[in-house]
Image (tube, rainbow, N blue to C red; front, side):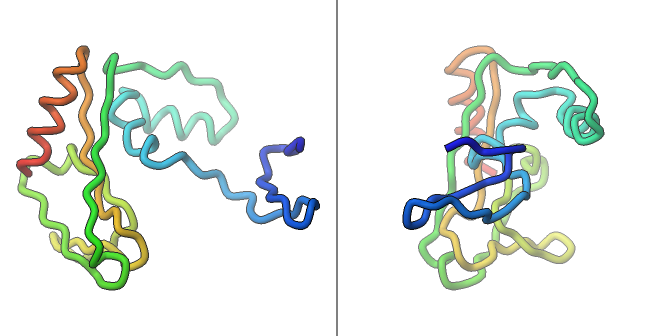
Length: 133
C-alpha cells in the first residue's frame, strides 16, 4: 500500500484508514539519536523548518539497554538516577517534579541506558558504567 505524504495508514478488513499524522521516532532507536548525532538539536530544528542539515556523527557505534519493571504496567515507579549520570539515561513515559521522576503506568520499560563509542567494547563499557547510575 502506498502511504501519501507520510500519513500512517493501517489495513482493516482490506481497507486502509488514517490513524495519525503525528511524526514518531522509532523506539528505542530514538533514545540513541542524541548520543550518535552531535548536532541533534540543530538537526531536528532545521529539518522542522524544511532545511537540509548534515548530521555530525559523534560515535561509530551506539547501544541501548532497556530497564524494565513489571510494576510499571500498573503503578507509578520512581526512577532514581545518580548525579552525573543523567546524560546516560533516556526516560520513556515519565512524569515528575523537581528531582523526583516516575515512570507513568502502562508500559514496563521505564528508562533506556545509552552509550556511544568508536568500538563495540567502548559501547559495552559505557552501558556498564551507565548501569551504575
